[in-house]
Image (tube, rainbow, N blue to C red; front, side):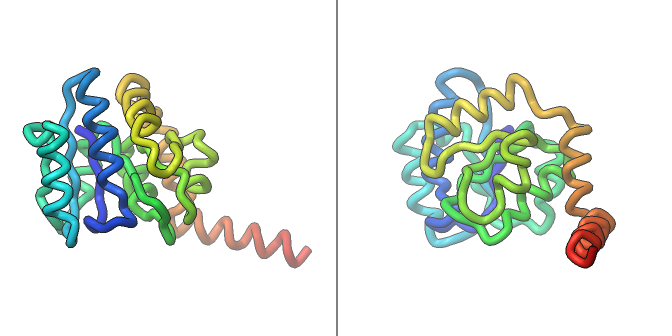
Length: 171
């Protein structure tokens, strides 16, 4: 199961994800679940139909607890054109779910440690996204690596990093 979470808007670029998923489906069986609601629902469903992947794509809408999906997904994909802070990546890491993300402005590169924790692909690159998803399906990032990175974003990890920064600036 490939998972995506976010508002169904242009910013999240689920159209690129659907095209990437269509490519993945030519190489292996998989399902795509996109959690979220928004004004592009109908357009995304039309694209799903035109790509002939509707049997393998679910758009269940907004869910209160996306973490249960993240804990069971094989990979989470962030297909955004830009982000403020892609919290969904941190949440997926905390659920030990491997990730693929666009290298969009707003923090993906930093969260994924320049691609060491999860694959980074160019914004709008459906082919690159498909290749990265297939790679994570075949060789997922180890769960212990994901959980260690998620810990950097915990309250304790944040406080520790903040204090270290203050020490560096004050000294």
